[in-house]
Length: 230
View 1 (cartoon, rainbow, N blue to C red):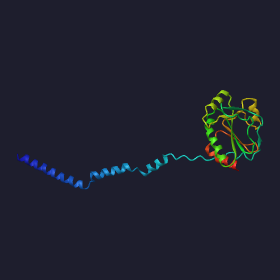
View 2 (tube, rainbow, N blue to C red):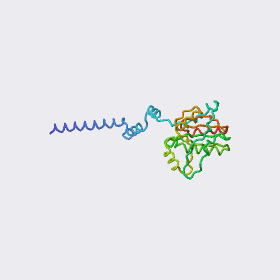
View 3 (cartoon, rainbow, N blue to C red):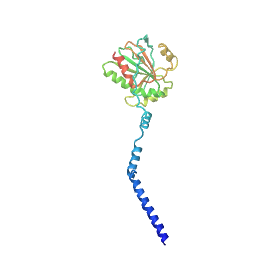
View 4 (cartoon, one colour):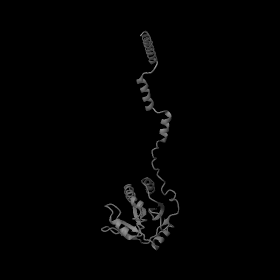
């Protein structure tokens, strides 16, 4: 019995002594809340290198389209006269007929747009070209927009014009495939089967001054305006 008491007192002494050690050690350790706070700050604040890498990986905003100098390299070249031969026309039902002679060389600038009903870019730019005509005429200078179809299928052309809304394209000149087309474009030394859409800017005296291959954009208007208002 005495032996057991001695062991018990020794064990109790060790417990008391170790408890004191833990208390002493706790004074030198950070508290749990502080350690958690530090962890949160570390997670919420990425390293500067990571911030730099993320910024460099982010896509830059698109740059605005730069206006091209439309026709600038052609205006000083030799002027070419258009063919004076009459060409065919196509007009939607109920619309006024067109004179078979192209209305050029009448003291005003004329924009000839060569298009086709099957040509998607041609159809998409029709409203844009019509808005150009309105804006340029509002500036006090006469500017005419003339559409010239290069369609090979008369039914497709006729159906397209018939389905146009009010204010849309319902009348067009039409140079048919074959000798007529080859002769007309041949007088200008151009391919009789051009990429569509194609545009020709004609000066007030009836001379072709500029040929534009492909669709035009809104950003091209200032260049045309500068030429017309010259």
